[in-house]
Length: 230
Image (cartoon, rainbow, N blue to C red):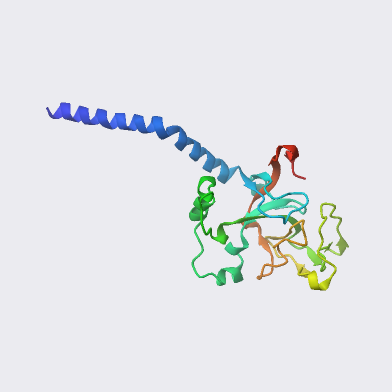
């Protein structure tokens, strides 16, 4: 009798396991693969603002690859996606009323199916996209219009269409005169007139390389502008 009951109980457990795998196995595997790819290889992101106009437009969908910067540091001119300054800028962190969210919490909040329904998302979990203008050791001079002099020479930036206004009463852009420290880069939006970038972060504006998520390499939406990002 005991053996029959044990066999019956084992069959019930096996049936439950098979039923679960049939119903949720494929979904679970898909999520695991997605999380693995997103963490180690690449992920999709969209442009929420006009800070990179005219090259990258609002709601453009991009592929951000994560392998390049594991072997090297970012290069000048590359477009990078990075963690929010609210997660690493010391003065912004000091103004918080609560502790910083954990990496796991941010991963959950920004997971596509969850982020769609998220309310009052913590700004420390956001991601930003900008262009690397200077790397460690570079001397930067940025005037009130947003034009850059790098190591004593003005640089050609054909991707910029919108500089800051020449009218003082309309210009809120910060001029910059700095040397970039080791392990950091300096980033600007291509839309110099409307971009919250290294010029404005209260602790100095330097982006730690360790906070960079990856390099924006490919635009997959909209279809009519599908292609590589220069």
